Amino acid sequence: MKKTDQVYPVEKNSQYEVVISDLTYEGMGVAKIDHYPLFVDNALPGEKVILKVIKVGKKFGIGRVVSYLEKSPKRVEVANEDLLRTGIAPLSHLTYEEQLLFKQKQIENVLQKIAKMPDIPVLPTIGMAKPTGYRNKAQIPVRRKDGQLQTGFYRKNSHDLVAIEDFYIQDPAIDAAIIKVRDILERFNVKAYNEQQHEGLLRHIVIRQGHYSRQMMVVLVTLRNKFFKGEEIAAQIHKEIPEVVSVMQNVNTEKTNVILGEHEKVLYGQDYIEDTLLGKTFRISAKSFYQVNTEQTEVLYETAFEMAALKPDDVVIDAYAGIGTIGLSVADRVKHVYGMESIPAAVSDAKKNAELNEIDNATYLVGDATKVMGQWSKEEMQPAVIFVDPPRKGLTTDFINAACDMNPEKVIYISCNPGTMARDLIDFEAKGYTCKKIQPVDLFPQTTHVECVGILTKD
Figure (cartoon, rainbow, N blue to C red):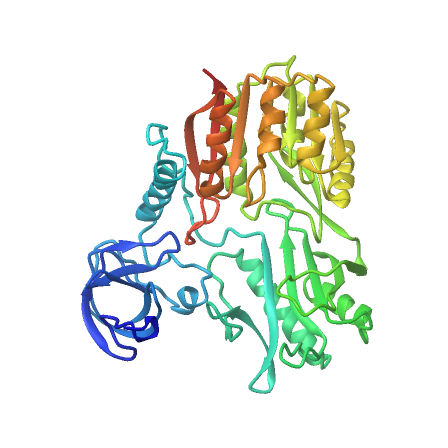
């Protein structure tokens, strides 16, 4: 039989009665028919459903629930199923207690499968008292649909905009601001971006808000520089939303899924907002990396600092420093903080934030983390603690080697991707540093993302 003649145990558009056996790391239910897996949205383990097969692939198929024969006691009724269809809140149909357990198990799974370290204790996930309305940042596509400007989110695996006004996980003030900004743009006849033709003007509305300060920044992402009545529109936005202290235009001329372009200019006010984190003031610009859940970030960082057990004479390295949130938060507890970051604007922000908080024992350099770490290692810098908070791709082996060559007492690893953290733990172990425990913290309730912090010491 030719490979192309492969027979599958299911047929597209046919319906089957199945029992959901598992939940993927992306929050989809798993059903098996003759060992052939089907992934299903809005389905939980233990549920008996009738599903329709909508896609058949070589290794797996995709199904859609037609009806529920038996529902899980762990199910929560979802007010708006678009939150599941778009992937905004893919776990919102699961009780919050179970979401926290799901995230703890995710980390246990990767420690076992990737790191082959099943004995590292993974503590119960620290959740939120109110796990909704927490996001301090929104990036919302704008399209013209049915003759009017619409904001919402893309259906999963597509560029089909689903109109949404209540995003559930965003600060309600941000949701309200998106609608007001959209309606102002409509009144000024601003043309929405058309992806197919690569024409029009407005691509995205991005809003950032200080959790404590309540200051708001609106970024209008446009296809080209010329923005007719841009300043007038910006002034109107401030008039209708007084907490807006900054309206920026960001220009993205590329055919790309990346939201922000290189060039930006101020249309109203200043080019930053300020907020506080663990009692320190931070200046946040349009492109700054700043955790989207302020309340839980404070929990995450305090957990990391507790693990570090910092002493007044410690020298500390804050790798992947961003705008300095970790290093500046501990500067008054230690002798000196050294940080590095590859984005010059972020380093400029970190230095400005040190000034704002009258911190004079923090040094920030622009550079690739691996190269700077190697240089510091050659200069025989001796940090007591190294904090690493890398992007999703994790650390390089060269970075890990340079970090371990400095012989720190502790490495505190903050991770937004347990899979790459598990991989990196193998390299650390080869250099004599083992992970003693991992604490998951739920920075992204209702989603499948999990943040965690681990402590590594020499045996």
